[in-house]
Length: 176
Image 1 (cartoon, rainbow, N blue to C red):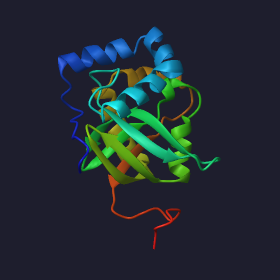
Image 2 (cartoon, helix red, strand yellow; image 1 turned 30 degrees about the horizontal axis):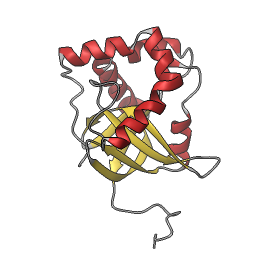
Image 3 (cartoon, helix red, strand yellow; image 1 turned 120 degrees about the vertical axis):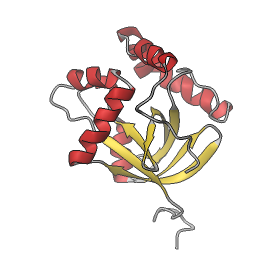
Image 4 (cartoon, helix red, strand yellow; image 1 turned 90 degrees about the vertical axis):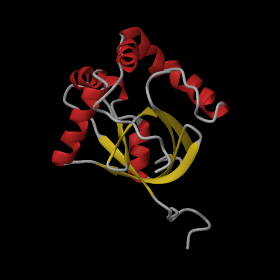
């Protein structure tokens, strides 16, 4: 896998401090409203080498809109597990799933970019014991996810795993 490996069980003190800062109410509101727009542009301009978070590992997800069919880009914090890129559809603890989650469930073939690497991946929502194991790792990695879980009320926060593939999606005009 070309996406840089990120071990969720051993975050550095610098990483933990950054995660704590990003978990404040002010930072959460800013990131939800404006930060992702700025960060998406910064990451594209620097080929994935610089982002606003500075300490959180981020991957740029390019996906197809479930309703519009238009290309969308979303910046996500991630870690890796068993050769997969793992993301959490926390929506900062909101009551609804984020739009990117609905999009990748409808169109699971996506592009992921990080640190100068871009590849084609297939998304799969994790369920049962595997979802619980990965979400526990996520909470260990980024403690803010425990707060988001409480804030989400009755919403079960999805865990999405992306596996790299060489196949093209059926909607790709060059697909055979």
